[in-house]
Image (cartoon, rainbow, N blue to C red; front, side, top):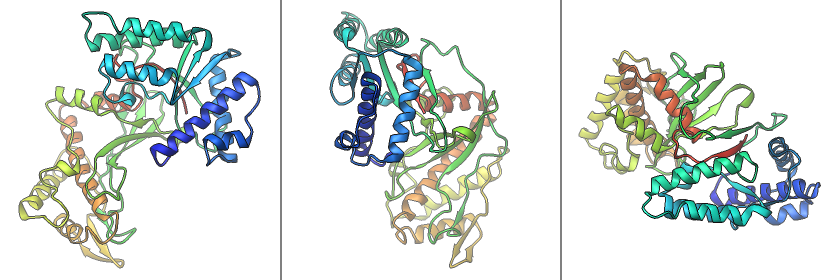
Length: 390
């Protein structure tokens, strides 16, 4: 949906202006008004904003009289209290709301109540956060304070979907999520589709909900132009909701679960002891990855590695993992994305090991629920409530 924080801000402010005009004034803003806040506004975005408005109105009905906030007003006010008094280090891990609607005649009451609840003497920051979330659930249910998370809406989708998230104070309501057998892939084909690049840079997998809906997941570096970057796990529904990302799985959710299993999340490529800077590889580094591949290849947990081979000019130049590794090392600077995709693929192997070990512990269904609710930001009672539009 967006390519940078600046672009995201423009798009979300476009949503804010469009929502306010339609809900409060009963008319769409002019193109001139929209271009003042989002210079990329066009027909496609107008259609997208219409879908967002229809979904919000599905929730609030004929209600109006709201103030619409993003960069100023009640949204940054709540964010500041969550950070300073409730221990929220990363806002989106707590609550991914992009804009906030608050009833104008209740704004001061809401702000005062939030301030009072999070400023009780002797309370821990965690306790303050629980109180803040409980209050935000109440006012969201009463349609007084509405934090809205905006996800991309597939152009072919006739209308946006609306759902409430984190409206319970515990994790009692959980649907079953299971991995689709044989779907875990860590393709090790290099240069077949494009010279010097792994055909994919991720560990891919597919999940299925108890209702039969399918979700595709991938763990990879989402900015291949960086030679050594963080690998994140992202989930996207398939079928009718294809393209509407659930989001990136919270590292807090991952760490909380993996620590209990005496496992740990793979480090970023820049901090991995066996991924050196470009051009500084040695035999110890290489031996580590060869041993890991052999361990995974011989594991009882099925991982699809595709064709383990390297190609150059449509000619196969390696057909063993060691050969592919050597070729990747030799050509890390042959393409602006080659080093980033290569290091991403290596961390994907580490993630494959995590999947294998969780499988041996019989924890796959629990793991899939962690991924699903971690992406939805609904993995803990410390997650804040919001209205999700996608």
